Length: 562
Image (tube, rainbow, N blue to C red; front, side, top):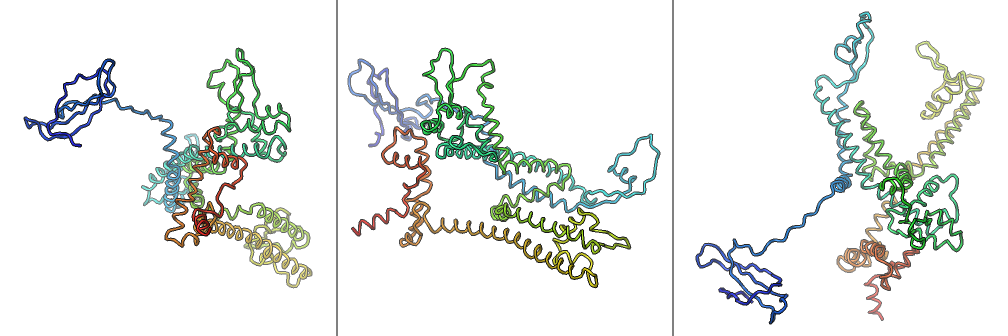
């Protein structure tokens, strides 16, 4: 219905306990034609005691400049400054790294304009490179030439630019370190707590089998089990209680309680039955220390920082920042920051991983190479010393007069020679040891150059190919198969856009993740039958609830065939 052009004004008495609702409606102009008018609908929905009749509505003509009602105050939310700053750093972590990489390239580009200036000490003192000697020394004329690395005189204005760039790079390096602490460190701590909790719950670690002497990580993780803050970031806050209930029948209850730090402490005025010791909260005695100190878990903090300082990415950023700070005193240290290209881009990171992928085998092969070269050094030192003599401008340089010099010569020169050590020493033609020298040179070339160096190269190349094949296989599987059911694209593409619709609507991986997070945050007493089934399987780390090899389309086709 529409409002009438000339609304009537009700004369009914308004209730003293009325709820007002306002509707603004333009009517054009008033009688005077000066200002537009609006209609106000008043709804009296809660009559006061003693009122008779149903709630009534009135409509009044009001000018626009008349206040319809007093505006309710707008609630303003205060922003926590520290939280906001942490969020800013966390969101811009990758921007900080990329800007630092750009500045590193700029600084190294400016380093190309540095040159070596050869000056006498007197000239160096005049130009400010050296400090003038005191008055008590005799004035001397120095003839020695000193070398100084400086910017070319025609480009001296670039010195200010490189200094500013170095300072900015140090600031960005520090910002990247803080951003990593805000963004990635909580994930590192969460992952470590998750691993500890699962090892406790499913493997009975530290309860069934104590950690081995050489396993420093398990010994360090044992430190956090008895803390009141553990688990802090892991979602299952009752993991200690579950572990104790699970293994209490087979192992000593008190030992498990002591290991997990769940001892019940007596508090004056509080009965022991009311003590709460779930692993996350424990009633403790009051101390003379301030509250913020007595409530601070120093043992958990020590464990946490131990985990942080063993994180390779954090250590890399610490070294990155320290190198940047030193670079302000010697700009050539910024050349180290160019290596960050291989870390920032995944394609180049695969190349670095190819070296570390078979790291143990690579180190052992290098060790075997050094041992083999040492054996040849022993033979050369005892029988072929006379062939290791180099003449330079009439002066003889003996390369095998002592074992250390002889070993370094074989390792440095013989390993790099294309034909082995025989290319770098005197020829044995006509010598009485000619046959033995020939065997010595050939076997060194065959075992060291042909076999051992080829093995080292093969390990690196094979690792690179293996990593590349894995990445391509994962990419191919994600593009050609459904991650949830594993059915191939060709089955769904019988219909237009069938595969895309399936992975986005029917088997969206994110929906399964959201469902698991829903179960983790929902009380188990409120589970439905389906949620209980999935939760029990998840507790056992059994993934049978995933519809592997099945989907709605297959079910529909089966029904049609039936």
